[in-house]
Image (cartoon, rainbow, N blue to C red; front, side, top):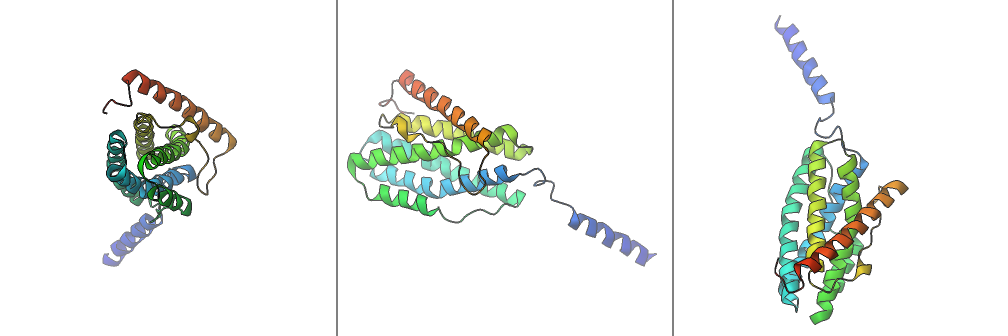
Length: 216
């Protein structure tokens, strides 16, 4: 009897081990890519924001740098927690291109620093906006959908803040597929259209609020 019960327990354990994790069963390649891209964004945009907080020549740029850095600290904690639950490996350092942006910003000074930081950061936010929007619309995982919504909201808020400095250039908002898992043509167009709408909306919001002088 004991051996029979032991056999049943072992069989149940074997079934449990062989079953996929329910938290990650609905995660697809685009979901994974968003987690990776958000993590990589936090790895360089957080430190860049701290630099802006400390080194920018304009008071508004320092304020915006601080707000963005604080948000990236929180977002980084969220992405690492979710990635751990769904078993997605995350990078530990920025990409080579992102490191070159940090070096470029670090080497600038005065108003040149301010303009370079604002436009580099705005372009980076534009590139991830399309992917986050696509994941928000298409993911089958509730936790992933909530995270993607948070990413969309954060990107929109950050673009509005960056534009409130008055030195954001319209050409800095570039939406491109990122990372190894390319979006298909329809997804790219979808992301581009969303970002175009967002760019126009946030610029309009800035004008209504009377920025750049207004505090957020």
